[in-house]
Each structure stands twice: as C-alpha cells, then as structure tokens.
Length: 593
Image (cartoon, rainbow, N blue to C red; front, side, top):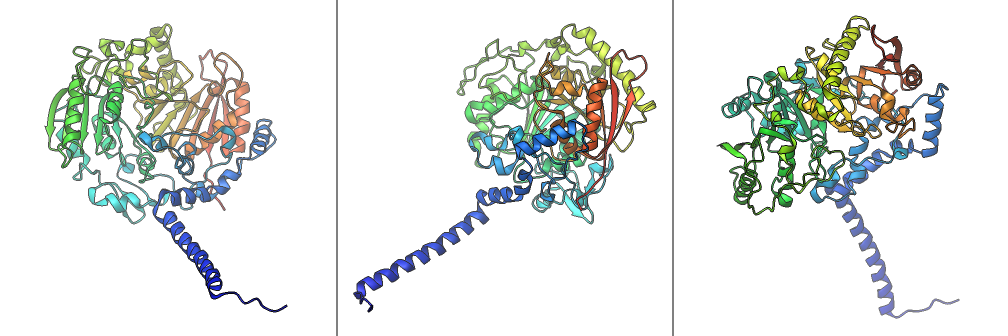
C-alpha cells in the first residue's frame, strides 16, 4: 500500500499536538516538583511515605489475632516499628492532620486514628540513643543523639534558646522575649507579681518553646505546665521533657485545653502568637476559664506595644477591661494583668459581645469540649480558691482541697487517700527498692491520679508528676490543682499527647479500670494497646509500677513479656486491706539491628 500524502497543514497540526503534549508533560513535572519542595503537600507526602511501613502493621485482623495470642500467653512478641517511627505520636500525625481544616488551627489539635488503624508495634529509640542526662544537669544540656533535630538551634540559637556543642545540645536559658536569660526575665516579673513566698504555685506557659521559663520557675517552687503544638519547630516539647521540665503537646484551637477551671495561679505567654481577641475573644475567654480568681496574666511580645499592631493591642486592652482585669503594669513589650477575685463588675458593655455562661454550664468539663463563647462564673468557685486566700505553698499540699467535695464524702476520702499513699510509697522505697528519690527518676506519670496522693507522697523527691485523671472517672483534677500539683484529663483508650521516651517512671493503680466501662466488666478498649502506649512514652530502662487484682496482674505480666519488659510480682504492703498485687517492670534498652 502506498503512503498517503497529507497536506502540510495537517502534518504541522500533528507535530504541534505532539509538541503540546511534551510541553504539557514537562510543565506538569516542574509544577509537581514545585509542590513537593515548596508546599505542605510535599511534607504530607513525605510523611505518608515515611509511615508506609508503620501503617502496614495496622491490618485490623492481624492486629486482633496478635492481641488475642498475647492475652492468652502464647509467647507472641510485639514486633518493633520501623526506624522512621522513632518520634511517632499517633494523635499528632502530620500525615493525617495535614489534610484537615486550618480554621482556628483545627489541624494542629489532637486527631487520633481509630483503634484498628493504630499500629501495634514498639517504637524504637534512635540509633545513637543514650540514657538521658540526669537532673538537674539536664536543665542545661542533653544528648544531641537522643533527638538530633537541629532546626531550633539553627533558627533560635542567637536568641539563647539552644545550641549544639560537641555531643550535647546546650540550653543557655534564653527565649525570644528574654534573650539574656529566663532568670533576669523572672526577676523583672517579680517586681510586679509575688513570684517568691509561695503565693503562686501552679503556672501555665502557652507556646513555651523549649520551656526555659518553666524550667527556671522551678527554683521559685512554681510548677509550670508548658505546652506547644507539634508544629514547624517539631521537637520543642520533646526537648523540654528531655530537660526534665513538665510539658506536653497541645494546641489552643477549637477545643478547651484539658484542664479544669481555675487551675493556674499564673498564665504566661512569651511571644506565643495566640490571637487572644480573634473569634470574639474566644481564646482570652479560655485563658480566663483556666486562671484562678485573683491570678495573674502575663503577655510578652506581640501585640503589646508592638510596631504596626496598634489595633490588636487596643483590642487586647479592651477585652481585659471588659472582664474587669486590673492592669498591674506595662513594661516595654510586657503587660501584666490581675484577674478579679469575684464576679463583682461583669458583665460590662463591650464591643466583643461577651456575656456570662448559663449557671448550668460546668466550666470544669474539658475533654473534647468546644471552646466557650461565654465567660465562666467565678461564683462556681468558692472564695477560698482565689490567689491570696488559698493556702500558700507548701501548706496547700496537705490541706483538704476546696474542690474535694466533687467526690461524695470528699473530706474523709481525701484524708484516707493521703494516709494510704504515705504508707504505700514508704513500702515502695524500703521494701521494693524502687528508684524513687534517686537521680535516675525525674519525669513521673501517675496514670490514675485521683486526688494526687501518690504525687504528694513523693514531694521530697527531685521529681515532677503528671497526674492524669481519666475523663470517664470522678472529676478530681480540680482538687489536684488546689493542692498545688499538676495534671491533665485523658482517656486511656487513646494515645497520650507526648513524644516517645518522655517518662522515667509510670505508676498506675487499678489499670483495668482504665479500659472498662464504669460499673461494668465490659471493655472499652484492651490492655495490650494500653501497655504498648505505656511502652511508647516510657524511656529505656524506665520503671513501671502497676497495682490491681491478682488476676489482672497475671494478665499484665503476660503482656509485659510480649513488649520486652522484665517484670516481677510482689505482695501488697503490710496493713493493706485491698485484694491486689503489685507488678514492678523495667523497660529493656533494645535497639533495631
């Protein structure tokens, strides 16, 4: 067959169409390269790729079969997660959260995967991980190899945040608003608020960086909860915990922070960049909920007398006036207000439409609760809760807390609980020879805190305790704060908002109660997942103490073996009437091959 001679115009048309396709392909590749390198999509896809192996362990049928084998004592080991999972936080997963709305920073809040999508594997440590530097030396330096993330040191080193020196990260104690050091900054604040003398005990540091403010407030016996999101700085809370400073991952976005009302004597923001007056002052209202009557609010940095932020600064002052806050001082770019001790002058006419919540509103509810657009009644807090009226530290630790009455017969229950934990801790130290009170233990968690009796009983040890009050149990966290201790609400059917390897010592009394429905023996979740999560947040060579009925402890020790813990079972302390045994376990220091 002969060739068909096409007109020149048709030949050129085909050639141009081919050129168009090639050009479009090249343009598409260039555009894709731009997306991957310069936008969040690239970060999201990279995170997705990094976690492919991790997620492959989450086949629902396979994980359920493993759980059943472990609980049956069939010598089924929980395998290690891949190396790229060393810093994995299931509820703050950038791969998952980057797909969510950015309105009010919703995507930076907790978003946990369904249980059957949660990987059932053990988080490994970094290749060059070392047992952490001990307190108090850790406040000033940590091992670089334990979290080899240089981004903050590179970007904030000139402001005194941190820097690398040989095998260590060094923390000079500075911050963006106090580059000369937290000590001088705290001394300046002491000119206006009672830093010394025990009047102030609990503080909240919002957007804390590496928590130098909270770290140096410890010298004044002020216990500061520092929080920040997992954001572009990535590891700031991880650094804080490695330093031995109380901290956890959180974001002030669409939901209340997981604390009861009137918890903190001092709330502090140093260039935290929270838009306090946005959304009809919703974020200021949340700060007001958390601040104890008569407490102090300190904001350093924008918008306080900041260039080109005159309106924002004016709005901030307007909100404070509407809530009847007393202006204590404006010193440079730092403002200090004092919250009124009662509902004396509110509501005022104001441009933000602020009004009081209904009297039926419970300001202490704060686990997955949307932020209020109304102001909490202070009359819901008895007058003895206010700063200056509540006993000074350390006297307030032993006094019956005003809000112990949230529990039936609260006064009697509190006193009995305090005596019980003094006896138990004495047994832990003298008979079980636990490491409490030694330099090996700094960061401690009580997973079922109740009134904070365990934490109070180790008050003389060089530790801080994160008291967790399960969200489905009696709301005793307010009483813990009234005692001058700290903690959070949490549901242990979900992962905790912290990095791997955060705690030296984890204590839990009544572990089964964390996974069953109240008043029932039906499971809400399972012990295997819970103990894998405990392993995630426990440091290598860290200690776990679990108290429960003997049959529960038998189940627990089978799971402990599957997650590479060395565990022993002990009798309860003499004089105890409870039907329980005590499991003491040590997490082994293993590494990937």
